[in-house]
Length: 257
Image (cartoon, rainbow, N blue to C red; front, side, top):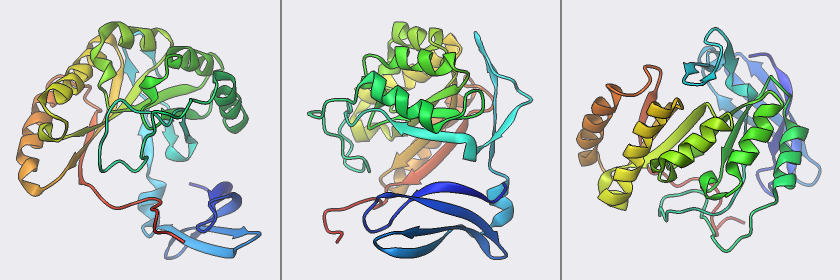
């Protein structure tokens, strides 16, 4: 990836500030200056070769065809949080959803997306808390795809267990989804069953589940997760990637200055 100007955050006040992504001999850095808190230089990846290899392969799936020969760097993927609400309550979630917060309007979200993305070039990731709780998500996806952008949703997958809902997303132009799952004991077998069923429905309706992230609470759960992944692998798109991770303390906390 080429060095370039970008946008970052001040680590103290979290305001958006201009930044330069710079490649050095010992890693890739973000260099930025906050008008209030001064100069900052942060290493975002020590392995330059690995960082430059981060691409995703667009795939062909169902009715929404994507050019398999077109690879895109992850720098062209831009993530937008479209809601603070969620249909689950996961203690480890970094977002801390609040279902009392009213979602920003369709016009506000779409204006933000059009101002910060390039038509036909950038992939728009819609996330939240949980993006599928927005009733107008299919309309938002259609508006984005109509201007030439690919769209991917990041979701817990519960609502994808409703086939008609998945069909509405596919009809709107959605091609990809990234799912976050847990061991079945975390939310219970009913919720977990809906998530797994949702993955099957996505495959059947032509939506590619690009990545499935599992969060486990302890090492004893890994065998169960691996068994489930192996079963999924027989039905999922061959390019579906899986990742198993432990929960971690990240993001903002009430104890920060």
